[in-house]
Length: 227
Image (tube, rainbow, N blue to C red):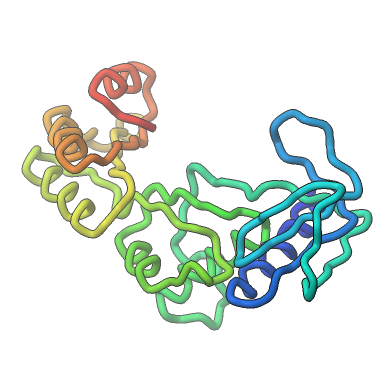
């Protein structure tokens, strides 16, 4: 109950601020703030948002003339949540949305409504990159980081080409899959893994890895996987 109330309140603030980035200053008055640092909850706080940025959080914040006031008595604000390993594929968009990129944007809107301000999408194809390119910072959606398509080439050449294609598309990470599904499929060869690590080093991209076995994890860490 408390958790849902916090997120609902945060969502209201995010969407209000996000939809008025070019408009007036807004002050959120009378609520409580939990900042996630370990400090005690601040009660009866005023939070001022100007041009989409929080400029003051205190019990005595000065409210500029002409500011829109939103009263939050009995509510608690928390920082935006960051999903460090998520997937954005359009699965959660409304059923009547057909276009793939519109569905992806719908996912990001839903994340924002639940208080998630950033999603790190680790393997959902390159359509998520295109959706991000066509989005505006003013949109009331979660910020998107993406690894693009998961790399699982069976040869160094194939793996390298996949990694380069992802890097050229503008990904934030490279993502490998090193897993034989409990012996039911072929695991990505280690020379192919190294080829992807090489591209990551060349392009300044960290490499995330889907893996299962502890020994593989140790070897991948030695090779340079970052997540």
